[in-house]
Length: 197
Image (spheres, rainbow, N blue to C red):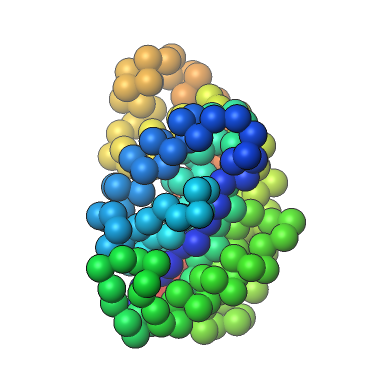
């Protein structure tokens, strides 16, 4: 089983590619190597293949990365399934995970995060949870995004460590994590992990 994230940058035509492209590449690099595991194509679209267990937090990590910019956001479809054809370039690989990811991405209209697997009942439950989570994550400020990104990248660090890492006060960090729904995101991911395997 593999998870394939297909995404694109919202508002990418406004302004400056430099504002988000390096941030996106840096984040994708933490999940694998280009172009085997991830690729940016058509200017503002990307694909990433990874272990299904990492998929949801990876999607949220990418969102936190892009939302730091103030101007931009991201739409991401998670497809879960098989990889029947592997290629040195992810954009040439194939299998149900890729098909599910593509179909899921095509169906993203009002909501910026969705999942499609072979388990429709689970998909419906997760997609309802994702829609609720977007009520918070779509409104992250750049400060909240930075803090959430740092927390996801350093799960072993406590608030005090994050405060010194980001050069902020601990109360700032605590407030940003609360406003960003960090604990709820982690609970949602725990539910996802329990059910996705």
